[in-house]
Structures are given as structure tokens and as C-alpha cells.
Image 1 (tube, rainbow, N blue to C red):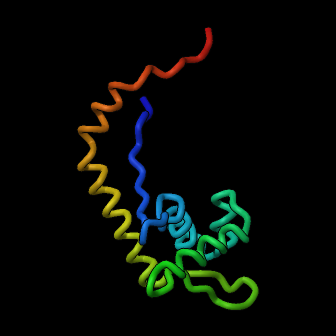
Image 2: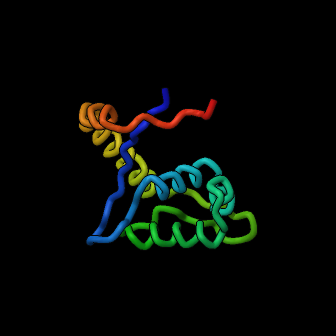
Image 3: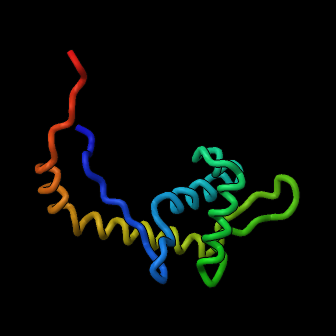
Length: 119
């Protein structure tokens, strides 16, 4: 049976949404593809939207998370800071999932039954 409830994590900085599972997925795609455009395509986003998210992440932290290589086909890589942010977010996510597992199980039991296919 598929998991009915899933804990997602969003971190706010100075009272504003800063980083969550979507931006983390983008960082993972960038690390995998080495390309802003390829990461965006993999996530169904335009290059402009992808670039704006990368720019917002780079502006949020003291050091950029993503470094680009100039020129056509130059590519992009996660910086050491980017790799650290990615790993720390994943650690926090795993800690939160472990800490909330029992409560999520209890909350799941309180959900209405999903509607099945019509006979």
C-alpha cells in the first residue's frame, strides 16, 4: 500500500521560505546532470524558472551553491557549499522523519479511506 502521508520539510530564513524539497531536488538534478537547462527539463521547468531558482539559492547563502562555467555548453556544478547544504538538508529531513514516524502512523489511521475505482 502506498504511503498516504509524507512529511515534507521547508526551511525559512528570516521569516521567508528559503529551501524545501523542490529546491533540493533541483540541486540533486544539477549535481546529476551538470547542467542548469538539463536539470530544469528533468523537473519540467523552463530554463528561466530554473535559473531564477538557482540565483535565489546562490543569493541566500554566504557562498554560492551552484557555479556555472561560461560559454555554450559550459555546464554547472554544485560548489562545496552546495554539496554541504544538500547533505545537511537530507540529514535534517531524515531526523525529522524518524522523530515523527509514530505520530504520522497514528495520524494516517485517522484519515478517511481513499476512494477506490468505480466497479
